[in-house]
Image 1 (tube, rainbow, N blue to C red):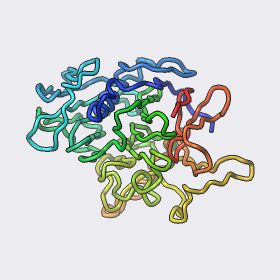
Image 2: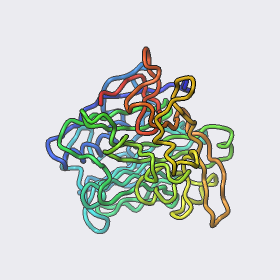
Image 3: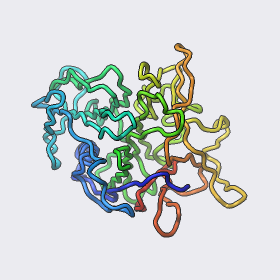
Image 4: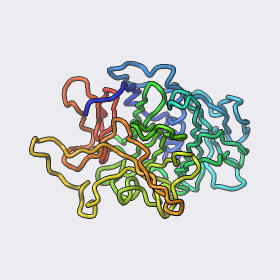
Length: 354
């Protein structure tokens, strides 16, 4: 499982405030922004500190009192954790906090930025996360800004599966161009409970692709943890509406003219015999290695007769259950991958203490 490129990390970061469940949730939300801006530091790995070129910037934001406008570059959440600036409310005309983050232009070969909108929108610990190529607009203190080409991950009632007031560790891994994943675990549980981020596609299929990025979210505090190997994340060979339910891996069509439909879906392909438990298999190959498959992304929308491969998620591998979560590969020396749920993903050289 050799890596195709360098990865950088800020790992083993503790929450800003874990004294109550509400503050745990707010700390999770703030950490997403803080990592992308290069504000949060932790244990760096074999490649050193993430380079400045990997950092995103705040395009505009809202702290529930003041709402910015597109490209004003004002961070109303602040550069350090302030719970009063992170306000949760349900959708509709009630004040809430949101932030539009702009990627480096190098995140894809297109040479343009993409936008990640995050918001504290829901009823208990709802988390709104949307990726778009177009700058979101229309935001007010009551309304989260949107774009016409959005891929949305939003669970309005319970996004984070574990907001226990206890020690949680957050780990950030990024490529030099800003593709990233964040995983979160609660100390002593032996698994990560939340996995989210934005990743680019690779391979010959991305030629001519006008939106070669995906956004993903999964939160599961049971079994192998996140990303959960069920319809919540992987679907039936691809995501069949999971994205509309607030979790999964979502991407736009090659022409950026359509998003995944709730009935058709799109996502990471895996063996069709999962009904028989491929992900649950605990056996090794004859060479004593774990079953692992590269992550290829199928995009399908039956109503438009679109069905094709978007590309490969570089350095991601599907895994069965023969290895324990948190294991790294290689097991000695500078590690390159870590097992999270049913994935092997880059870990930037820093094992996680779960």
